[in-house]
Each structure stands twice: as structure tokens, then as C-alpha cells.
View 1 (cartoon, rainbow, N blue to C red):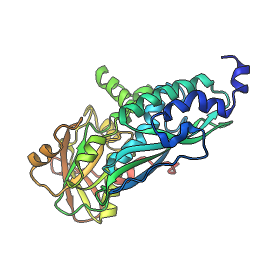
View 2 (tube, rainbow, N blue to C red):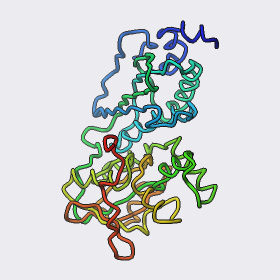
View 3 (cartoon, one colour):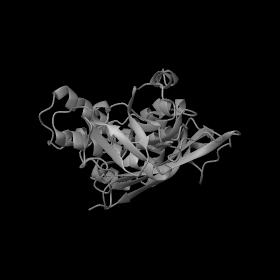
Length: 328
């Protein structure tokens, strides 16, 4: 595409060319030709709504391929729905595309987004598309459905509850290190898996739905296991005791990498609590999900999230160590 084509293509051409195909399966989207979508209310269900923004250079690397950016910007929203036990319904998309970005980037992004939404059963129903002199910014507002009164929340953890996580913790954080050339001393296959996890998060939607009526509290891990578990503890008025040896990590090569894995974010796994003390019962309940879950600790009295290794508390592993957009 020539520079002339790039600058004369207007917003409505972009919508028609890139995003209308993403709305074709939802009649209430009116093929993105109207001012807004009109969606039928579903009796017996609660709407679950979430929104996340991804900014180039902050949430994804400037040279990340558009396919992985699409997977990430939709995946992080779907992970929020999974943490609430919701099934995906529809989403809106706001695109602020950097003026120097070729429209071909947006086409590749839209094609990948179509694959992701078909994989997870969700449809685009509207949004906005603009140019910006700043970094490319992508915002998705996703809506899910959960049977009335059955949404998972952060506030139900009780002293004595078991703490579980899905998948492997820290792959996203170490994947970012690998892409930045700052990860060494681990197996190449492990590094490759970490990069894939960072670029292509896997929202645990099936698990979230299975946890309805089982989990007393749940949250997705976006800012680091310790910080996000800390949100459960703060909201529930409890503390947590974790056993380091029980936490599934991509590597235990050294304490620095372990610290980064527990605090780095970008996992998009679920951490949840349950009053069920028999692990076999929990495993049977989530049987058939696309991910394994591991018991990693116990909810205790107090307000702190503490990690123990061979009976010793690790003082440097604190809830305040997680990722924070406004810490610098």
C-alpha cells in the first residue's frame, strides 16, 4: 500500500475493510453500520463487564507482531471474565493507531482478532477508530454472561481455605525478559514457552465456569501472583501462607528468577480459594478443563501474603512487590 493510500483511507473504510467481518455473527451489531448495537437481554443471567487498554511500549513491545497483540488485548479481557466465572458474549474495540503505522498492520491485527474471537466464542459489536501522534493504543470493553448470583468474586475467602493456581506461574514475566535479551541460564525450550505465554495469553474460561459454586474467591493473575492474591486477601479481610515448593514455576534456576516469576505479571492464570480440603474433590470438579491446578497454600488470619520455604518466611516476597503502572 502506498503512502497516499495510507493517508486517504478514512475511518469508515477501515471499519468496512478491517472490522465489519468481525461483527458478522452478531445480528444486533447491524454490521457496524448503525450508531450502536442492540442486544437481547437474557433472562436468568447477570452481565459481567470489563475493560482493558493496551498501549504500545507499555503493554506490548513496539516490534511485537500484530497477531500476538490481538491475542493479548482480547485475552486479558477474557481472563477477567474467566475470573468471574462468566462466558464471553460480545465486545467493543477502540483503536488509536499511530500515524506512522501502516494500515496493513491494522489489517493483520483484525485478521488475528477474528481468529481469537472465533476460538473463544465472542463477537465484536462496535467501537471507534482514530489516528494518533502518540503510541498505538487499543481498548476493549468485553461483556460476559453468568447465571444470576453465581459470579465469582474476590471477597469470599475464609481462614482455612485452600489456595490454588492454574497453569505455570511466571512464564509471562520471564517471556518478557527473554524478548528483551535479559533471560539467561535456562533451557531454550523453557524460554520459548515463556515467550509464547507472554505473547499469547490463554484465558482460563472453561476453568472459570467450572469454579462456580466451588471457589470462595478468585482473581486472574495480571500483575503478579503475590499482588493479585493480595487483592483477594484485602477484599476478604484475611492473609495467605504460600509454600514455595508447591508453586508451579517455569524455572528455579536462581532466586532472582523465582522472585520475578512470583511478582512479574502477565500470567493470566487464575488464583482461587476453596473451602474444600480434599484435593481429589477439587480436581474431579475441574476435570476436563484445559489446564491443571495446583494447591499452593492456605488462607490464614492477618492481612499479609507470606511465602515460606522449608519453614522459613521469605521476607523479600511481599504483596507490594507486584507490577504497578503508577510506581514510577
